[in-house]
Image: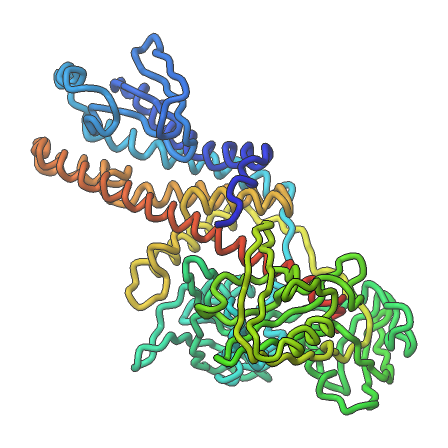
Length: 592
């Protein structure tokens, strides 16, 4: 499992989760509390958090105020609204005394139930106002709906390659995406989200999305068949993807010394716009064009400089972007790929062999990406050549690898001979040698824009969840663990992103709590209206059975979601480790 303790041992992370997640729930419950007091209803308990009580006190009004260990929930015990009996604490004698309390009216029940959501909305308005005034950082590339690159393949999290759905469907760079499955598209974030939550299917049951495209002034529909791409090894989470990336402005930030870009006249501030007369839409698009050049073939690169078009004839250069890679193959077909890890000098061929990839098989079950080879048959290895020599000299005897996991655990891996070893040369890439200015802007969305976006996203996600044709399941729901992690991760980028997320969180809480489902506020409202229409209360046994049944269901669902939240955390920790390993394997990749 991942190191779950690290995040919550961080004081800043804990404060943020308490402030924005626990605080959102506090605001909700405080709304219920104030409304109940204003309507003259009896408040038994006001609890912030669940689980063991840290401390409590009894107010002059007889209400017991509780602070509990787990700050991911809370409740206000209102016997006149919903007597949950032992589920909310207390004892039989206490509840008998409460039966003589005046019955809450329909208006009482509706006002108190709505108050929680109303306070979440008020809190969201305050937060949205801050976002509107201060602004939030955004990647401006995702503000477009123009396709910047369509690759040949896309990759699963386990490294397997899949033919790119967008490429197969005929989508091209420069296409403008107007809508997906009838939903208008404003930017590329919506493209990704609408594909992910889509519920379209072909006649044979494959995922399908209908893209409305504008190309060369013509508008037409293209059916794209998204692939389910694994995003987490621990949970098996999958998401629909089509493989496209957005167009972006390629304004030069820095020209590398002794690079083709410097030699042939590209300058800082230039905007790269064309390759041999072809309009460019992204770095990846340019990279594809460069890779199609013949050896020693020059290219005409057009740039905008001080508003004027300048054409430069440049001879690109192949640059080493990775280290060499050794492939060890067993007689059963399993493979291990290793490179030399040397953080002090990435280009050095002397260091420690580290696992880059490994076949998922029983014989290699203990191997993880990032494991290091301490020795082979008792001999320390400091280069791929040394590794190859030891294995080749072992002839037909079993070979013992002493390995170490990234966490320091030592273990042995014994492989039967014969083993084949091949050293693959470093990967090269044709480049010009410059970097571009990061596509960052500060956005100031209005309060209405933030609310409409939050409501739309909540409705779309809920619709996808209940649609049997979508690929979004219950385990995809974000629980306390996921929300806490999101808040922490956003805080590492920009604190304003946390506040923006809190707007979505509070709108989400308000909306979902008003759904007409027993236990939720909307359920209380529904029962109050039914009682009003009937002219008499619902049978106590019926009401209690429904409430208890849905409470048990809700608690079970929460345990399920929390379990998958921790599993997802573990999978993400594995992915982060693999990304660190990948960063070691790659020498500096200029990308263009």
